[in-house]
Image (tube, rainbow, N blue to C red):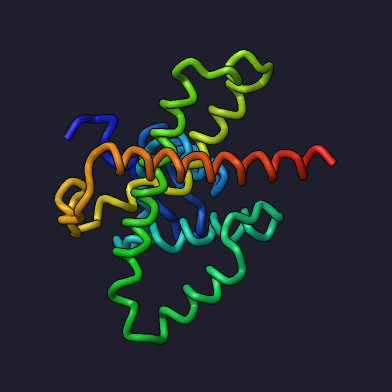
Length: 190
């Protein structure tokens, strides 16, 4: 494994302070969120017990962002997640979420790629900043969650249809997402 692909090891001391083992300094949850947004995997372990605390801290980061009004997860999705902990569906939920984020990431990558090809908006001031912000958002939201997906790959799905039909469906999905994004941006202008 290459050095930059190794997870950044963060140790939690008994005082609950978080210590970056690479830079030999203390970090905050916001620092950890920044590492993740930058594409770095993070592993947080308790110094004394060696327990992996990564999930606990990632959930805490999400909760803090949500509490500050940076809502990404709609209430109905949060309700469904809570319900999934009390049903037999718990075993299917992680795979479903991983597959959903993988499809989301793929469609966003295709959208960005298409936007870069002869895009009339690329000359609009600030477009590059919006595009970079969207890419950072996608990285932050998806991380490597899809790496646990064990289902069929998209080209092995066994679904009938030509490649051209699939491209057309992808383009329609991208257009729909773009329309939603434009609606949200127009609401922000008001």
